[in-house]
Length: 448
Image 1 (cartoon, rainbow, N blue to C red):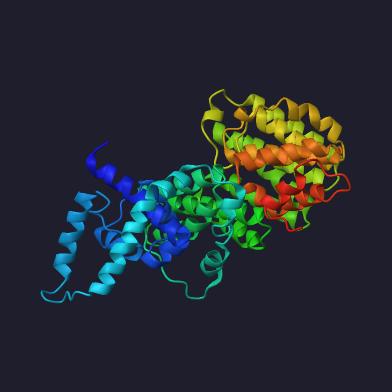
Image 2 (image 1 turned 120 degrees about the vertical axis):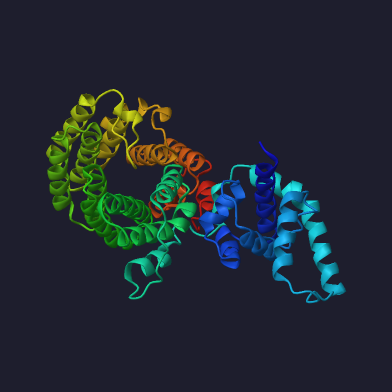
């Protein structure tokens, strides 16, 4: 690691420590510095280097002394920058303020090691709840979706948009919903700005990036039971169709169908999923056929929610056959949110049987799923969620709690979803709750 990279890494650690000392969230610090919470997260992680103007704002807001922190290269850069913008004689000493700042720096430096060590530990669900809500992006999305004169975003090059989209997807699959929500509106706005200023293939790619940004926004809205899911799902499908990419269109159809199901239109959702899966399965592209398989799984679960057992089982059979027909290397070509693998088929079988009122038949699928076969935290959390519901339907309180605790371990933000809090509350305040159920419920924010 070169010296500059090491200094930026140490700068990130100092920022985290100072932010924690001030009890600020990443969003709060970003507001003071003119950055998004997502950008603050990347600076703290050492993956984004701030401009010298931004560095100046950050150290001023946090009262950091780069020389005291041993960041001598950055200190020299900042000193040169300030010299170019400060008129001679404009600096007037204020001994009281200087002493106060010096004392603040000494306290910060003295506590840096302890704070940094604490920040390095995995966060519990309770600690995560003290940050902004994972779903507090709603206001930003509303402005993006509905404001008559929303501020125009600057178009970004496609390679930058691809990197930002990959980062957003990584947040989603790791169940870092707070960080995902913080950066999504900016990503979508930048993609829309790019497609408004270009033509041809570049415009189609920008449509695809915007569509997938809206897919993630819909997933986030659905997890928090937000009505914004309707608007984001619709925008996703519009952009996907304009991209001309059948894979992206299939992904957008999936989240729209989930929104339809939640709105009480499961039959229409199943019909949409069936038709789209049929179109995709007829294509030569293995990725398109893989998406078709995921649509059949979603259709099966949706049919089960509509108490249509026959259709649900037929669709699951079709999904399993579609996965079996895929080339062996397709699972390694990651789809955007859900993969087409045998483990995913088993996971959907658990949900389908539980919803249909046959949780005893779900057990054989649940016990054979190796969590390692589900390569993302979001999917492993779904395994814990569905098995918790299965065990609850079988009146097995201890195993229900164990499944919920598994969700907490693999995805602390996931366990604070409204649906899981309701399940935890039901378990905790049952006539004979399992040992530890009430402590768990309080830990994830259920009020007794």
